[in-house]
Structure formats: structure tokens, C-alpha cells
Length: 263
Image 1 (spheres, helix red, strand yellow):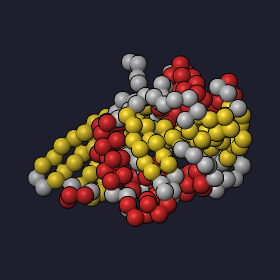
Image 2 (cartoon, one colour; image 1 turned 90 degrees about the horizontal axis):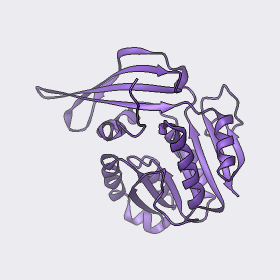
Image 3 (tube, helix red, strand yellow; image 1 turned 45 degrees about the horizontal axis):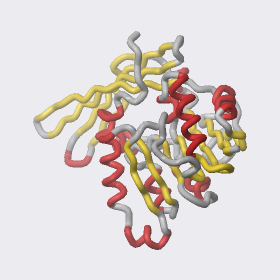
């Protein structure tokens, strides 16, 4: 199997990301991050901010948020979302949102710049090589102020995803009168602990039809291994949670959350 990079596919996914999230119940993670960030004084960094799905609500709630992402098409959508933020509300709450294109393995910020770093919705699982994850954790540790918080959200079910080919997963109308169909295939690479999603969006608008294929790859990261890596990077584990309401974690939990404090 050819070597894969976790960041590939996201440029092509960008036009469909918000539509797909709107079609599902989602993981309801935004209220969780808002509660955590509300207790933080100082700037917050979101790794892999994408279209601003989480960064924008945090800024609306009054946080000073910096979102970083490698994908220019994703950031274009985040910028549009940022521009639609209510200026009146932002002025009232004091929130700010600044977007940066960059590599999370080598964060382009001075040491101790942030009082919190958030890694939502499995972003660290897109780092498919151990050296990339280690570099990212070291980089996060460098830019996190002593006593600052690092929040990590892992997706636990990717290794148990059944393999299948060309399954229609979703269809519906989108803005501008387009009709979208998501066709998906799933493959497992147990040796490298990777789950590979080959996705294809079929777009129909009027009499025209186009296809947009891309591949997303995610790595399995168990809780025990992740907490050990965080400790090696200079963080002390503060909490391991099993849902977005703050309940304790166990292996059957649908959500795996780690809160760690920079030593």
C-alpha cells in the first residue's frame, strides 16, 4: 500500500465539509469546548480549525481564538464565516478570531503564546506517522504557557469501521440548488493502524453532473498511548472524559477526551 499523508484530501473535502456536518446530528462538541474555554484567561489556539466550525462559536462567546490549518480552501471558508460574525456581538463580548495557514507539526508562534490549545474531533489522528505526532506534541508544548491547558478529542471507533465499497452514505440538497450524493468506501490497514475513507461527492445542478473524489486517512490512537505521549511532551493529565457532558471515560465510551496541563 502506498504511503499516505493525513493532510491529503482536505482541500477537496472543503466544499462539502459544512454541508455534511449539517446533515448529521454530529458529536455536539461545540458546547463542550465553549464551557472549557470559558474558564481560560488568555488566547486559545485551535489545531486544524478547518472551516471555523468550532473557532467561530468560541470567538462569538468572547474568546480570543487563533485557528491554524494547512488547507487553504478550508481556511477560505473559515474566513467567510469569520466575516459574518456579528460585529456588535464581537464588540460586546471582546471575542476575536485570527486565522493562520500553517503546519501543526511546527507551529509558527512564540513560546508560551497560548493559555489553551484545543485539538478537536480527531485532528491528531490525521497524523499518520509517529514522528509527526511527536513533533506536533512538542510544538504544542512549546507554545503553551506553563499551567496552560491542552484539550484532545479522539474518535475511538475508526479501527472498528467495517470495510465496504461504494456505499451511498448521504444525499440531499445544498445551497444554490445543487443536489449532493456522498459515495464512500472504507479500507483498513491494521499493520499501520490506519482507516482509509475513499469518498466521492456527486454534484448535480440542473442538467450538469460532476464528481469530486478524495481520500481521508485516520490513525488509531488509544487513550493509554495518548496519555503517555502527552506526559512525555511535558503535560500532566488532568481529566479523561467519556462524553461532552464531562462524564468519566471507559473503553465503551463514544467520545474520548483528554484534558492535560502544561507543567
